[in-house]
Figure 1 (cartoon, one colour):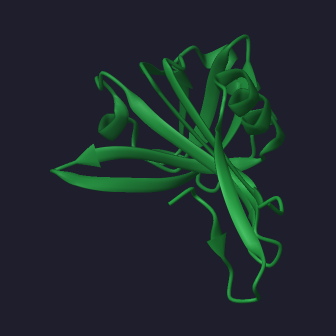
Figure 2 (cartoon, one colour):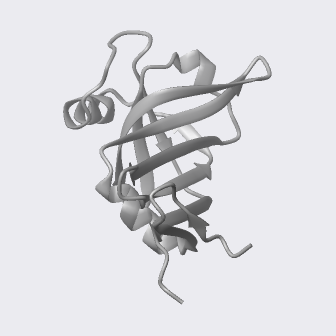
Length: 143
């Protein structure tokens, strides 16, 4: 099967992978996403806000710093999907991450990125994208 599917309204849908550069461009346009990590052999997904600066992804998420520290890599996912129109995109970034502990840098990003929680469940991370995967959903072209 070619990736083309008929939607219940009869319209054809198609999808295609996009290059890493396009995926990062799409990620820049999103306001929020999800941080994904494993804890006690279970996937944990937390809402997050982000900004892409100097090739690094800065993420603010309501997760405990202790749960995120010392991990070899973290995954971040964002998307924008218009269900009614059947169009949109999804981007997943994985790479080494570090908790931002510098007080001046942390204060800057707390002003820049609005969060949901404050205190021990308010963590700032810097992810260096090593793996970037993007996928676009679109209307299938008539054949």
